[in-house]
Image (tube, rainbow, N blue to C red; front, side, top):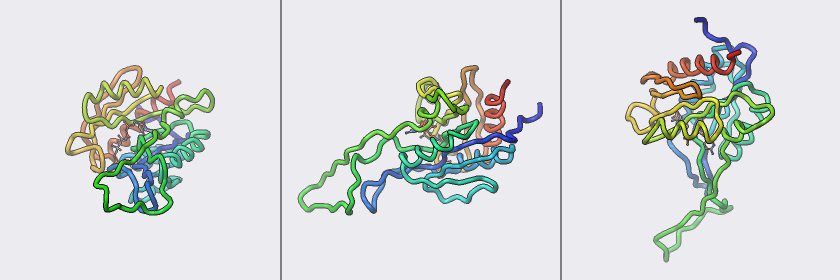
Length: 222
Ligand code: PMT
């Protein structure tokens, strides 16, 4: 069958980690490199879409023809994602958004004291970006999430698909050596209401082509 074109369609994609600042010199973050989200942006652009890529702090070149919006923290990523979602047909959350951020930002560098060998950081929950967009009643794009899991991968991913009211979720076992965070390769299972399909280990660039083809078919199904 011919590939579903994304010509004339707008696609917004989040990629990379977020950084949650503790003070002017420190942050909480994770090992996401942005490779998966950037590969999806390039594949969607090649399929004809007008792509907005909302990127956390990563060291990757912008795919050609893609509009890139750089952000740092989860709140900033949420604002950029909500703005992009107002205009897009398809939203894909590939970013590894920090679930929590420090409850307060210290304006000055936090000093270590001589008298304490332990320190506690209070955290508050970040908003769930992809769930917020999927929960829309107006201007709701076809919404795809990822699920980074280390155990019970499909079960946990199905839970997120339902809880976050997503149209599709890409389950990602991040405990394997040759996949997940920072690897050039990945293996995933695509899950939606109709069922699931395993996409075996491949370069993230190749996997992105397969994912965009499936997302386009499902999102634009008559
Ligand atoms: O960037 P790479 O190094 O290439 O690695 C790719 C990846 C492993 C980061 C990617 O394939 C992946 O799995 N991304 C999702 C990572 C993640 O944070 O998963 P999660 O199960 O915690 O979140 C589930 C979904 O909710 C994701 O779509 C996530 O973007 C979204 N989310 C989570 C928390 C939050 N506050 N807001 C969100 O939108």
